[in-house]
Length: 110
Length: 112
Image (cartoon, rainbow over all chains, first blue to last red; front, top):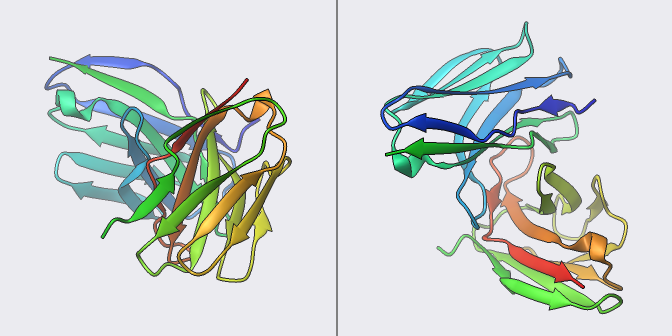
């Protein structure tokens, strides 16, 4: 079993919809959680970074961490075609290394 | 600031050939990383350098070597390429610890 599980998709939604992307993890010691966005043929770029449980909002993006359920989410409001990308979740382990989900491919249809 | 740069962007090798992937960062970061990305596998750490002068193995180090040339540069060498090393390779850098990792544009390597 992988330490971080993420549905690879693809997830296809119409423009303007609310998108929910999720990851589950097995190590209860994880405390730092990240979402990276990766456009086709590009490197990943950090989108959201949260510590411990709770919500963090940045514009149309909201990151949510539920440590009791070992579950993190990324919500995208008013989705745009430019949001079409692969979204990777990542967590920092006790050696300060990133543990990655496989990534979810998101397609926003105009 | 260019951030993290990688060369080459694309490379095709024959089995058994060797090559070095170059990475440089201009953010004065202490830590640098090499990952490979394969479909459905996410990113897997090959080697990392927590600071200038140190290197350590990651999750998938077999078949690779690294050199931290100075604070800016971190190279990845394939001594005898194998088809299983066909992948996209990313270099990243960070301030270390829990700091954000910043990624380069990647090198697409095909081994025939």
